[in-house]
View 1 (cartoon, rainbow, N blue to C red):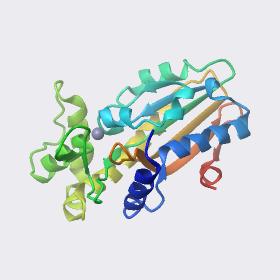
View 2 (view 1 turned 60 degrees about the horizontal axis):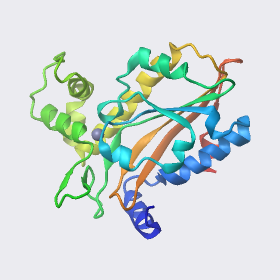
View 3 (view 1 turned 180 degrees about the horizontal axis):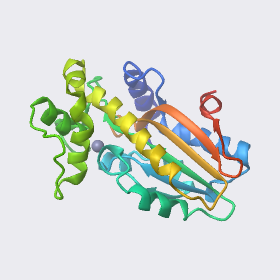
Length: 252
Ligand SMILES: [Zn+2]
């Protein structure tokens, strides 16, 4: 269990960069309440998928009540890009329980240390801070050093090379940023959201309700847990082909 005081202290630090950040644990609680109120569905009727970074911190800091849903189906790879692609998205969609709903969370992540340093964290058992997201940090460094060639994607490092290619056209923006890794996180958010939308649009659903939530996931030190700056919460009704913005209701 996270110490409430550590969580509150970390949230105050996180909000200096992400003013609207919320605790992921609290938000899952609210989300489950919202889905129940809107659709009458209990957590066991919801198939959860996530597109978040492979980083072990994201497993350590996974919001506890998320496990009340089915899943998670893991769509993400390094920094949360949905590398599972169309086949992963389709498999995920077809694992939904009868008369249930699909819930998908997507987003890149960034560490914020106790002293507010952005893009690093002390990991459990380590005495020195390290990069978080390490993949984003490495890609930024390589792009800024001019060592990324357009179109160079290798079998041995496919995911990392893909991130490098996403960031490469934005070299000037990264170079000018106060925090290049925070800027890269914004670029990754946009790339992930666009790819998720492309996958969602090309997937057939055996259920009526598809709920998509996006945000920047923020890792604090493990005693404080994780936070998120939520960017969207959309409900798609596949029966009526309509979409509703649920974000105001969630944040209300
Ligand atoms: Zn990462």
